[in-house]
Image (cartoon, rainbow over the protein chains, first blue to last red):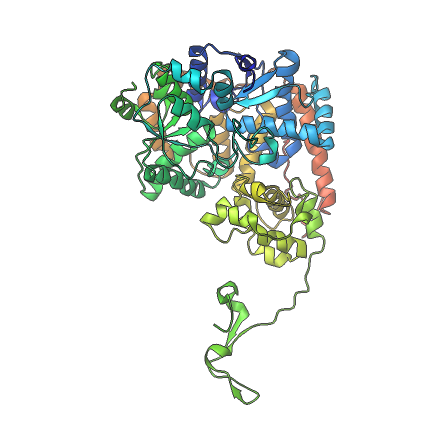
Length: 310
Length: 260
């Protein structure tokens, strides 16, 4: 068990999506942080991590963009830990960390660009990058979380959906697959653990790490719709009421292609899509507006009322 | 069946005779179908090296054709023609004309990295798919794919302001691909959003499209990245033998470039 105090105050990197379509994730993350007594210091004057696109123009540009965020957290804010709730951001910061530790050419380009841009070059190992799941797990833990639950998620059947970038490729997550207590890249369980601690009933969901086609959500929409429909149907078949998400791209993709499957393919699915932070917030007794439940496109109010959560 | 896995042979490579006698033996029926002999002479011996010179393609030489990439592939499950193992095989052999049969779907890789996870040789097949898609565009075999256009409008915006404002990215992409903004699903999505979104948030989102979110003091980072991107573009042109000309003598090869 890592030292929990280290994670009670972290540098917070929301990223671009959380200021746009992922706003409910941003709001609910901040709300549960506050409710749990955790401090988030937003990374000053941050920039885009490069998302899934810049690497296709040039991977080292992406490494530089992510390294600038890490550099500000480490060198200008003196942070030890950077927390990124978005899978894309989290993935890119981890990838930059890996490349700067193992690839001389990436180090050289990052140094060159950082110098020209006029800020300190990030050096591998200066900060630790964690996901919002690690944050709650490490700073609070399941036991304390369970003790703080005011409004149990009992009776809510959840399919936990982790997507691609939280676990793949394995080599950029050296802390995963390290036995008991660590996250698994083939069968991730951190979200399951936290929601179970909040009383939810996790269903056996085979598509936890399936791809939603997020990279081509607009450029190859039909494939994305097919991939999302697989995920939605599998969750329904598993008996879930909601799909819990931990990535704004996955979340928006599921919401958007649930509608697109309806309008373009005539395939209607009923399952609701909710951020895990929103579920935790409701369990901690926060009002639905505090966790921005009304900002989701997928309208889960009726379901939550049925379960006595709103 | 006299020809095993006949379904894998293209119809134009099969020759069937209703009645056939060879050396006095009647071989009609099943035994009258033959695979046409093929002699391949148009190897592109530079192809593997060129694709390896593009970002992501560096480790193609490690492949030992186990097929784990195709087996784990998200897109292959939707479209069986999408076959990374086979394309890597063709590239390494230099069978360009064969690869070109699939040129219009290679860009469809969704970067889920299941292949990278499964690959026992660290080929990074996801990167090889991107490098191959870039190579096809640079050589003039394919127009810019919708994915490439999206990557470009996205990267242009990050380079310009340091941040992404999604509304702008979507509009630029639809413009670049000539699509109308008024698509049935998009209209339906906006309708559902508007029923519950608070006015304050809508105003904030609306303002973001006017006052673009930006990283302050971004100018130097932008200039540095643009210089770097231009230098990479030059290097890639040289590696692909495209100095100023496409392979058909066309001007302005469409090499991926971030900077405007």
